Length: 252
Image 1 (cartoon, rainbow, N blue to C red):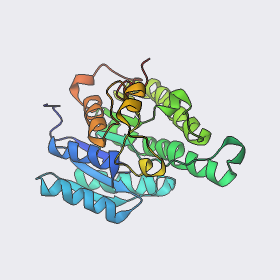
Image 2 (cartoon, rainbow, N blue to C red):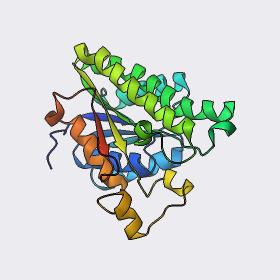
Image 3 (tube, helix red, strand yellow):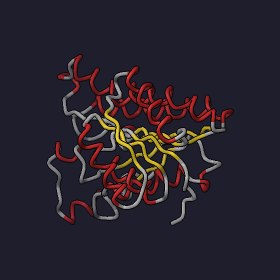
């Protein structure tokens, strides 16, 4: 599919593995220059090398999205390196399992620091760069749990993802006059990520069929095309929208 993205510049957080890496590699194949960021510097470098090995342009940056100053510094470095930023993919996130009565201050702050504050800091940092270029696209990676609350004991995680969706809608209103479109993508049950390692996943085909109409869990490469679409000219009249990528697990 031709997304008409060649020559654009994307800044992606949490791109060292899983969904973030798949998104980064998909952008690279479309001729987009990719600023690959991750808290794990080695993982970010591996993703950047993968893009370059396929003939794309990429640069790796170590980034802890909870550090507001570091976010602004790395955004400026990436913009200087590539000549600007057109697209932000706010992908970095963490998950945690705990019953509501057992959630601690530290664990709550950790999840909200990465999942919510980190996305806010990145938006603050990239918007001036996008204004200089006459507009841009911001895609926040949300979660099905932000809609359902989730069936697992992670109220702090699901509420943080609901907060990301509310933040996305607020940003869509605020930045529309700047021609900056802000949308979200909400994956369902995705395997092949760091998150999936934390769960004892059921793989019985009949159980899957009963819960997911497409009878399989998603892969990172199932999520990436939705992100590229929202970054493309085909989505030029879409803002404040949330695209579900869940195989039918949730239909609303």
